[in-house]
Image (cartoon, rainbow, N blue to C red):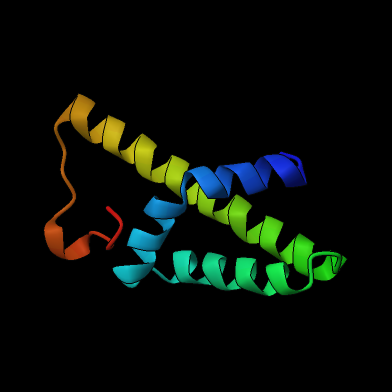
Length: 88
């Protein structure tokens, strides 16, 4: 995704990201912090790249969670509650 597409993605998913951060999800908190640091200095390429990397990590993790959920529904296997993550 381009920089602007990623900004739009975060804007659309901000409620979801904030909810996860409030639940204690470290990656969501890291994403919010990186966005705030980028907002202060928007032309800093280092901060842009760091924010883009964290967004990519967050998206990949969300895709993994979605895939896991689909497989659980398909095969009926559920991960025990004590082994689940907060965002599951």
